[in-house]
Image (tube, rainbow, N blue to C red):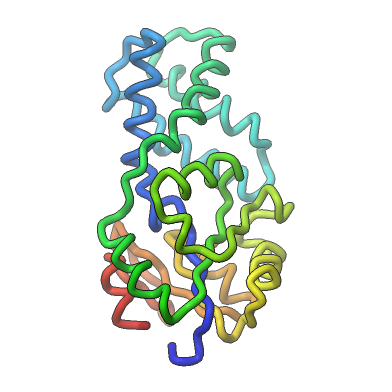
Length: 227
């Protein structure tokens, strides 16, 4: 990694502990609106549905509005819990407002960024919505580490589309051969980066099988071995 000058990170599921913070947000929102469902049972359905909707959104098969509505509607349908569309839209809006208020980071995040910052320029590339992602970065205290933040809303395309990586590189003033992407999604983060000439490291939190030739770590602290 001696030639690397710029390190690009994904945010959710890589630095910012999305599932933990999301659960806390829903705990607050469901309680405030007197939705009488057990949080673990709600999350059992919501988490895989949210993942599926994000995959569809990444492929431009659903809109942002459909994602935000559909993941909740489908969750309540699977729970057999009757909720009006009006309430679903209310819950969706309150969840988006609540989400950046919970800011648990993956273990080792701040230590890693502190370690890297003196020797590398650090950046974010995210498919998340700008206002929400900005809130996460600022409220968690890690926004100060990053020189640029590129999100899919302002780029007009989502990872793994090459244009979002090209826009991020341009904003950073970085060359692809001197840049590396670190993220939790093999398709969006790793393959997307490799296809534009960047290096990549897969954050393999759940220790899934990794294709040959892909560098992976299971804990953020392991990244120090490469930089």
